[in-house]
Structures are given as structure tokens and as C-alpha cells.
Length: 237
Image 1 (cartoon, helix red, strand yellow):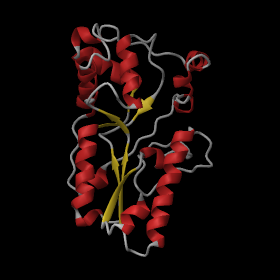
Image 2 (cartoon, one colour):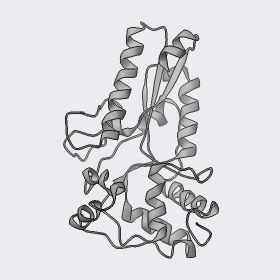
Image 3 (spheres, one colour):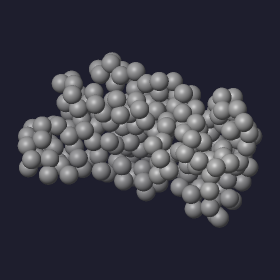
């Protein structure tokens, strides 16, 4: 893609990376990670997906550096993307909300940075058009991370009857590990159990004047759209 952009005379490419390229493979810490941090792919506490995001972003920066300024690169690093879906083909992160609304036995001890998809789109536009974005990375996240239990409480409090199956008890880690033996979707989440990693979007807000909506609103919009398209609820197949 970068070669094609270069050959077509494109001025700037905005790459969608991930916080997966920011804060894995490091000791857990209280201070939030920022754009100066890079995932340590030799750290061992990450999925193949996370490792691939870090390797891919590094490769993009290396390519642009080798081009000697002929092509500009700006990178957006979103946390977990929530918000309204456009149809029945939806992102993996939203499957967590679907599972909650369909009635999981409880909430695993998982923690996610949350950002609304509409705010991620807005940040991409700012990254594309602002002169100040040239050669920069920008984390997209709305505040501190949320636990899966936090997400469940938002759904329960704000979605009414549509959230009647949402659990509000936390599952012990040993039980989640046992369940993952029979559920491949849970296996990729095992490295995340009990680990809190926060990141800050201060740079995007300061440099690009980006303002994300509250994380609770992103969670609510997710639940509402899953109901709207019949992905959960009585009309789901």
C-alpha cells in the first residue's frame, strides 16, 4: 500500500495502527502510556494479533524513513473501538458487548481502553489534513480503561429491558481459563486477564484539538445498535 501511494504521488498516508503497538510487553505501571512507547514484541504477554500490529507499524515507519521524505506518514493508534455498528458485519471488540447482552455467566477480569468509532474517524480526518500531524503518532482513547464489569453496569443502567440478560458478577480468572479450553474466542483474551494498561490521548487533544465523547456513550451506542440490527435481542437469529 505504501509503495502504491508513493508511486501515485500521494502526499500523506494515515495508517490505522492500534494501542496494541503501544503498551504490551512492558511491566504494568500506574502512569498511562503515550506515543513515545512501543510494544516490546519479545515481551511474551501478547497475542499474535497484538504482535502483528507492532511489527506492521514499525515496518511502515521504516519504509517512510527509507524514502527520505518523499511520503509523509501519520499513525492513529486506537484503543478498543466501540460505538454504533453499520450492519451485521461488526468488529471483534463489539462481540464482547454482544456476549454480555446475550447473557454470559459473568464478567471476566478484562480491561479495555474505549473509544467511539465516530471519534476515531474524526481523528483520522484531522491526521490527514493538519500540517502538525506530519510524522506523528496519535493515541485514540477516551479516558481511563474500563473493566468488562464497568461495561456491563453501563449497559444495565442505560439500556433498560434490552440489557436484562447482562451479568453483573465477576468471574474468577481460573474459571475463564477453564472455559477457554472449549471456546477459541476466549483463548486470545487469556493474556489480558487482570491486567490494566492505560494510555493517554493528551497529544491528540492538544495538537489536533480532538475531543472524544465519553466512553460510556460509546458503550451505550454499541448496545443500541446491536439491538437495532437484530444482532442481540428477540429479533436476533
